Amino acid sequence: MDLNDRPEHKVYREEVRAFLSEYKHLAPGESAFSFRMEPRKLREKVQIWQGLLVDHGYTSRTVPKKYGGFGADVDILKNRIIADEFFATNVIQGLGNQGISMFVPTVLEHGSEELKERYIRPTIRSEIVWCQGYSEPNSGSDLASLQTSAIEDGEDFIINGQKIWTSGAHIADMIFCLVRTEPDKPKHEGISYIVFPMDTPGIEVRPLQTMTGTPSFNEVFFTNVRVPKSNVVGNRGEGWAVANSTLKHERGLLGDANRSLDSLLRVKRLLQNESLDGQPLMENPLFRDRFIKLQARVQAMRLHEMRMTSEADKGGGRSLGDMVIKLLGCELNYQLDGLGVDLLGEIGILYDESPMLRDGGAWQANFMFDLGLIIGGGTAQIQKNIISERGLGMPREPKVAQV
Image (cartoon, rainbow, N blue to C red; front, side, top):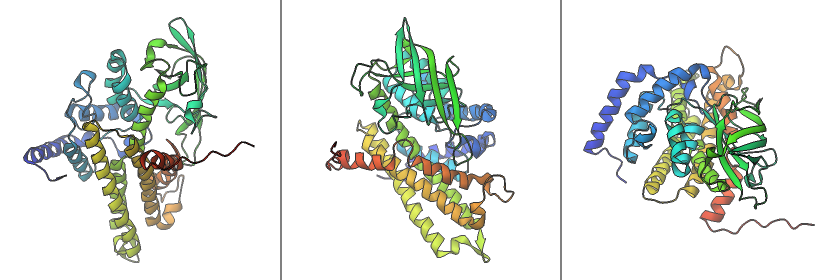
């Protein structure tokens, strides 16, 4: 693949630079676009910036115009130009969250026209924040064994049950949720994928404190929650296929190479600006060697994502490639955080409200948070098993005999 700019791409690069020169002062700070959802107090500023990006085709670029997107064809070189120019200007490109990166592509693939028109536009413009109701206390890795139930009552479902590890539920407006609507069917059948507001009567959210110091995960309880049947995405009882579509996009979100590049550039600034015995840390051969190895891996991940995008545009499948992105991307992000913490020396072990914290404690918080993502969204061990069995044709792990 030739990654050099063609004439049309040189023109496009100048367009992106002109946009940044004119509008970058409107971009919210980095905290508003962290992997964890933005605080409500920043929402208005985020919405203004997100709307500008959508209107100019710098995010949600291929979402059809009829649903509020930019409506462009896939062009991986333009995607690369956008990312490179935003990084060069130290401006965050846009939101990547459960609604924009997971729900929108799922509803484009499986949703009714009514659901597309109702939810896509406000979601990509950050007017609606979403959470995902998948895992349950006894249904994590074996998601298809979920027990949250939906019983018919006229034109509605009455939902009862519990979800756990529900990221962002405490600030979300909407949830896309897996419930069992046909209890007599086998466990991979009879599941429906339903969307509904988080302020629906009967929903209780209990935040879970994590080692990052913030309650990014939650328990969610449903008690006689009434939801219209028309809120089912895809066909009733066929939610497992829809759910797997969302999981595919989740893997790409969790291992996003652009996020790794952002971390790499922040590590680079630490190496250039921090010193030891009067010498910049970039002059330290051990730190420099670690940085160069991670730099090569980030570039490999970016090229892999470009290859996956190109294959998907030609109609090829993405599932195994996305598992590679999730597996390697999450591990890479954690190692980048670890290098950042090590570069800070004694300051790197500080936490909470110490006045000597750098970047508001972001390095320490991300180090803890990204460790969790190696488990969340499908553990590294499960990703490896699926890649080996489906991708490499290796035999399935034998089941332990029942005694």
